[in-house]
Image (cartoon, rainbow, N blue to C red):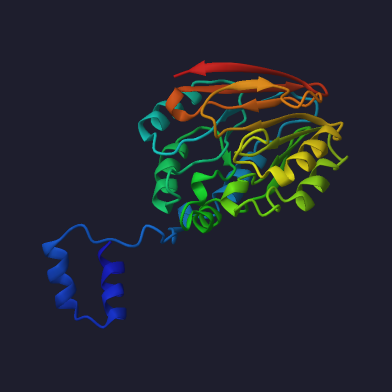
Length: 276
């Protein structure tokens, strides 16, 4: 912390002795909470975890199993216990945290969660939540994790990870980005699709101007197994639009439960609750 502070004082034209005096008299001086500059090991975590996942490929036709949860926010003690529990599971390939990694969009909050999650024996992947976009959080998330919209294929399944936090864009009619989502759902090169975001489309924080287009795109995808969200801090599974599309919502870390999701066949799946 000392070197960045001295650098800041140099830029302000203050003598180093003044900086030293201030440091010795007050230990509360720090960078702006909006500063998202990160050390190398806290950058591009999505790409790094995808590379780790690719190193353990799932053969075509094999059963897929992953851990699903959301809303880590400030629940750091729960994160430690969750990691210990997940590490005891067998046959799971990766974990997904469906947004709200942070509470106030601060880079250091995302670092603190990663400090725990990097102790997992399996890679973890994320989508951006509404809390992750507070202040300078959107830029922090992109620097620490990566793109707000991305997809990857594992085994027979394409995972489509997208930003659905419409309220954080003042309901501008552009989030989720349907110009990006539609082609992802129309990809016929894989057996199955799973789409994951933070805010569910039936929620008031989802942009109502995009809701029908989003639901229709999902409904028209013959490969879609289900759509998965977080945001509500509680588990649910159902078909809120009565259109044959299943929506799954995850627990938050604070609920001390997560899901193990097993997928096989064309659209067969099982959800198992685990308490920790």
